[in-house]
Image 1 (spheres, rainbow, N blue to C red):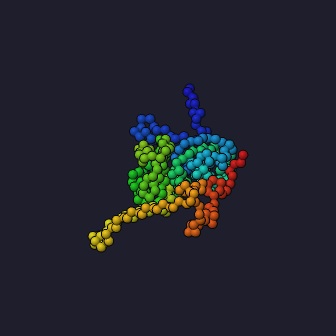
Image 2: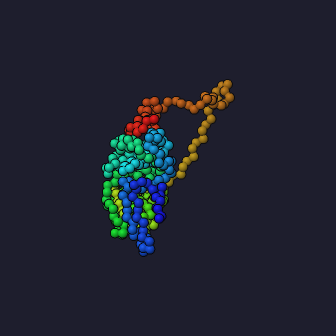
Image 3: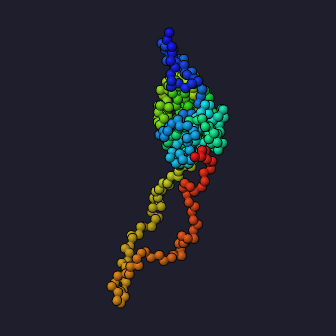
Length: 309
């Protein structure tokens, strides 16, 4: 009698996806989406490390090394994300028992997960700026079945609205995300292609016609618009006729040589540097207020220490 040997790579107690029925016309007919991850897929850039026990991590020491990126802490039923921007902690989110926490409370929760595993990734600064919407957006649509909806129609509808939308798709062959900002898809990526790319990255996932779609929404942000330079205005014919004729520039008079002093060689004495006579119309540099120092170390970090050596 044959005995089925379990795969050693399977996590104990993890829910395994249903396999398609042999000979079925639909290769994914028997597949059902599993438990939805509390956070969408994060566009992993360069992995610094993955799966290190939380007690071995010192966030304060890692932030300057990461520069721009994130730390992801996972344990059973909980997940936390620490975003790093300009070598400092940017935003922190923690999901525990179905609740979302932010800021210092989230950082304290993550710091107490001694049984968690931590991974660190370096991301493009633009991705870090958009990443908070992956976690703080409010739910717009939940568990839309892919076979129920028109995918292109859904994206077109979201592109007609203002604000930022995070559209996540979970299919038998993987997960993917596309971000829509004020009617334009600005970033699309998948688990197999974690670097942001074109919209076509989601086409193989959509082609399965099996899966679920989740949509988060964030209100529009007021971004300053760059001011364009004014265009030159051509004078009218009447203005050109009334304008005075241009005056030809006159050559500057030649400088007269200064008379030589008795006993002098005719050369100006060299004082060893430029003249620094005070000018009353220019304020003294010492009278202006000093600018406070900027850069790292100018002010203490608003975040508490998560783990001390």
